[in-house]
Length: 234
Ligand SMILES: [Fe+2]
Ligand SMILES: [Fe+2]
Image (cartoon, rainbow, N blue to C red; front, side, top):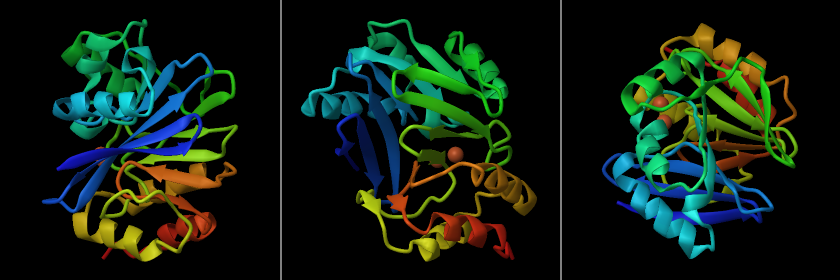
């Protein structure tokens, strides 16, 4: 089990933990403002947070500067390290999540999280406007994905995931890997809800998808969306 940090562009990093036993990577996305404040999308597991901090320091980032945390749904890999973030940060943390998820976060971690509406846009810093898109039952009822408007990047949480390590942004056609992961792990409970989510997502001009498991995706975005809409779940 090891975690590595990847520089995607000057203000975007991916920390990725690979668990051999599962054949699956777990990604955390780190967006950095000009004044070095950090927005963290997905916290990763609680027990791995120290390693995330070590990796951040390796590329010159200061974990204590985490200011915004986005939790796409209430599950250990997405929010487990919230208490660790609260412990180390110098800042007053803004924690954003679906309204149902904020109840859970407040109850378990004694933190005041901010509920985001479907379609709400929050500017976390200059040049980073994040649009929150509710994706109910993909794969939890409090699920959402996040679209970085200026960069045309979709942080897709558990949508478009693939097995294997994070290898950067993949421009090849990864449809088979995405479909294999859906079929193998059986993590999507309803095709109707998946189609609803994909219809909402497709209204945005997406150039890159960064799922929380597997590699980033560019090109073929319309193909992925349309193919999953027509996917036979049986
Ligand atoms: Fe999940
Ligand atoms: Fe996940």
